[in-house]
Length: 280
Image 1 (spheres, rainbow, N blue to C red):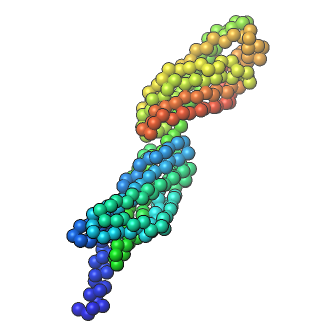
Image 2 (image 1 turned 180 degrees about the horizontal axis):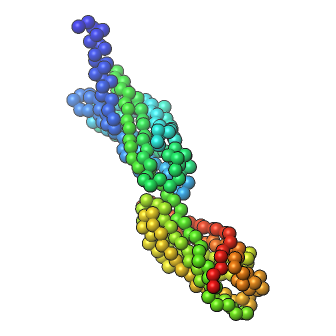
Image 3 (image 1 turned 90 degrees about the horizontal axis):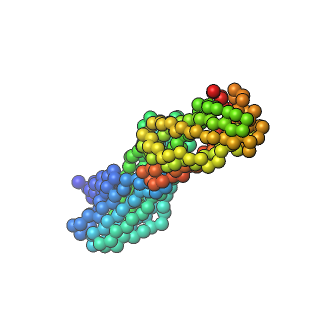
């Protein structure tokens, strides 16, 4: 075997150390290890999610290892949704560790466009591809890593006013009943805290800061909260009195609530308006 051929075989053997998710280089009988952690959620809201991956270099050897550069891409359904890179060299001394955070932000709108659905039955999966260039002494290794996992998505619970009924009405007072349909589109159950709401009819506020009890809603489930309100028509005036005598009325229903998620408690403001059918 010629010297040139032998050198080529050595280089091929070195490049063969490129592994998926974990790579090593050997020096002094002990092997530095390079790993990429699974992604974890650092922040999530109704707009998107932030993930963090850790590129970890453990160097128990007697010589230094250097991270020269890295770049990464995050894909969903084969489409690149985020990318980044680092080009500053970082040395890892003997018997030392280096942790390089890879921070990834993904918008829900981009995810929905990639999978062509805004309410997938299953959580979409992501693929993080990272390439890192390491050097130690005279040895340079390109390392390829891949991480796959489910991409968490946080949806707003839906609160819909329905079944509005006038139970009784006199010249000075009225009793009305209605339901709020509470829907949980998330892939996990939620505990919906008490809801504080306001109701406007015919452009007039008729009830403010009334509350419902807390509710547990299963994943992809729904439940109904019922309300009964006594209205003082003498205070509310003729506009509301006349509106309640109609078969249909304009309304606005708004308020605040909070619900528990695997990533802590999230607050929710809601508002809806339209026209209600009045039943008697």
